Length: 138
Length: 495
Image (tube, rainbow over all chains, first blue to last red; front, side, top):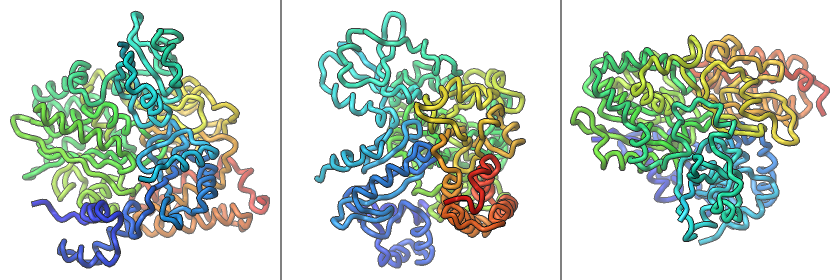
């Protein structure tokens, strides 16, 4: 029998619901036979676990060193300006969530921006409008 | 029909290979074969053909160049590309050539020879080859690899584990990503050799979630190797699992990684006990970096002495440096230890990108020291870097140009530490926040007399009293930024 794994359980909940609703923590704890504090502790530790629903599309701007060296802050400013959105927030229409990420391993083709599963490289601030406009809604 | 080779590596795709594949899909004259990348990312997207004189490449290709390529006009022999020709590719020798998920190609290019050799030897003899090679962990701690294996082998237990650290959290590094996407069977082979040496039957690969393509490729490789019967040692099936991380930098530290594998907060644990004695689920565990495991098959296939013949006295073998930032030629450079930083930046990095002037280079990730132009004569080996209070880490080299503000850069690194701290050690948990606040104050022009001395004192405390390298190394980017660029730190002189 596999040992109880709080992290994998929370990730599975997030896969199903898009996030882990905080009111679900006691129920998850009961199912795992652990304390709510232990479950909440894991939920709050990992950046990839979210407690609010994300937008339809996730934009991640990389702030790793090579991207910083390639002036990614200008790219981030372009996204924030175009969407009127701060890091960690979701647009009012629920379409885009903006996050920063620390390294996707695309350092040799920096700056890097990921929109959902697609990774863009050598991104210039002026590219962002076209990239965001190309995001199809399905 | 003409066979064209195009990489499906994440960075090659981001550089334009995805656009080429889309544009050329379904073209009857073309058989598109997707390979790993040569790692010369400044030349991607690269398209190669087999020509009478050998593999020939077209670089920075646009879709409309297809006709020219099919006519065989304007290509460069790969053997004549200086960036590649000057390297010593012993771990990355097949990159750009083979299809990542083809077992046949892996075997045809020397794959699983190391494992065969390891299975002919006793476990002690396998460990002896590791010792003779002088291989030190390539994740950053540079611990002698043979020693971990020996301790795990000698520790009695009913179960033992092998764990690959595929978190590769240092920004500026991507060689593990390349191994997982480009030659996953090499990683699997190294893991199997370790399992044989220590008597383990379970292998876990902890891969950062920020590498979805690498994770998918490794998963597919595990399944292919399993179907072909490779995941067996002495008739016993070896269980492989791939686990994704959840965005925490500290989970690249070995004890925090094991906590995370067991589903808990990735908090650093005191050592002893060392993982080789008591690791995953309290059992003897060899936990090493992907690159370390990827180097093992070659050592078993060709012998430890062969590997040790390269490099320097205490830094044996080769290191795949990953060059990024504002250089002309970012990419993977596998060379023996011993060349200077300056040689690497000029000969391989190609100097600065257009319209960029050199300001500083950071080696070893977000906790690495900054080197100004006057300090580039340092040889790339573990001891020289340790003497200089610096670290090679995972081999990441990032070059900054003169548009980068050193105060802003220092603030960025301290803020990163504050965000990623696991919270266990007070100097790191609170010190990084206070450090960030001081740097923000200086950046806003509100620096106070004594702030720089305060940062130095804070740095001393963090260095002395942190359990892991996050808190221990966090002061270095800040203090080297102050040391080498004093003119940017004059309190009261900022706007």
